[in-house]
Image (tube, rainbow over all chains, first blue to last red; front, side):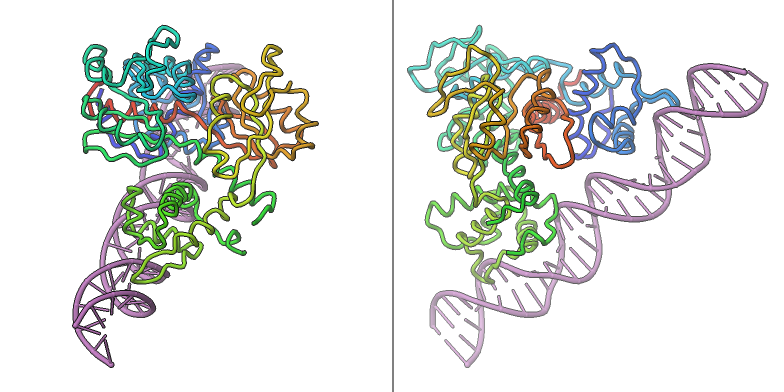
Amino acid sequence: MYDDLVIIPKATLGRLPLYLRVLNGLHHLNIQFVSSEEMAMKLGITSSQLRKDLSYFGGQGIRGTGYDVAYLLRKIKAILGVSQNWQMAIIGLGKLGTALARYPGLQQHGINVAALFDIDEAKIGWKIGELSICHLSELPEKKKELGLEIAALTVPAQAAQEVTDLIVEAGIQGIWNFAPVRLETPENVIVQYEDLVVGVLTLSHLLSRRLGKMS
Amino acid sequence: MYDDLVIIPKATLGRLPLYLRVLNGLHHLNIQFVSSEEMAMKLGITSSQLRKDLSYFGGQGIRGTGYDVAYLLRKIKAILGVSQNWQMAIIGLGKLGTALARYPGLQQHGINVAALFDIDEAKIGWKIGELSICHLSELPEKKKELGLEIAALTVPAQAAQEVTDLIVEAGIQGIWNFAPVRLETPENVIVQYEDLVVGVLTLSHLLSRRLGKMS
DNA sequence: ATAGACTTGTGAAATTTATCACAATCATAA
DNA sequence: TTATGATTGTGATAAATTTCACAAGTCTAT
């Protein structure tokens, strides 16, 4: 109840989604208890780091036995805000936006894709699953109607800031930005950057070291 | 030439792709010099952090003027291994794999999508852009023919480990894994995890704090 | 030439994060 | 009941990262 008032280090928060996944897997297998050692193995981290992380919000481990999977799951879900549902809009239905609309992982984590927007007249009215693509101008209206709280931004980089302004104006406070640009937003809006290139460039760096493929 | 032998902190390495993007933008605008302050603004970090980062590999800044954009660009590209080209295969041509195959950001950063694989007979032979989808059994052969060095893994989670074993067997040393599972691989294989859910859960956490939407 | 405005590079300090190591606790079996 | 083995929780320590602050270098205008 007061867990979120405790200060959880950023580094720990960044790992919670990973813990959530492993715990989900264990829960699925009907496993009741898991030791920090066992879980850390699956995650590729040290058990002491895991225990320390869990200690920030009271993992309630039992010495000699381990952690209660179901309990930990609930706890981490609560912290990550996954225990309630979020209504999300996807803006920009290119390949990436479309892939996102169909990505089952979202629904599984309490993210409900509730509306689709684009400005390409040719796309308006198309259906993806149950949802039709609306014109972006309907965003304010739909935001109120559906209680949209998150907007996934999958438009070309040049359009990103302009569309962001519309999102902000409509009163949406969470933006999941796939466009490779920094967005200007008011203080009260949270932007999460998602940039595929970062990942592959990291890989590229590690590989060029490993393979000695210098330039 | 010896830059890569200098130890660059992990945290710094993680920011280099972001620097690369901003520098690319500036270069496109024909801007020759940029100050740490100006660049840091665009990135949303502090100028001292940027200067410290650049100092690890010699940014060659000029006091009173700033950094030479073209020089920095070359330097960072070299470190990230972007100055040469990598041949990448995409394995699993679902929505995500298809979106990736068409993602222009890859080519721009020296990642060449050179082959597509799936095991769904219905998909074999389909074309995406210039490339046809091959059966996964052709991987070893194609790897030799095309010099494939990276495999983007966009298959369902259940299949991920099995396909990984095939990738490893074919001699590919870099895996860009989009499946939400940890992969078992030999020491000499580098796995870069890309998990969309992490990003949106972080957003969810921040939002639930901000909006006071507790469970 | 000189003054004044800018900007870098970097030691030192502060902060954050990770690891270590072990006492305390719990379960189990004899 | 007691011994044994397993596992947590956490201070203390170490390591990594960020921030601070300013001397030193460079440019521009006069």
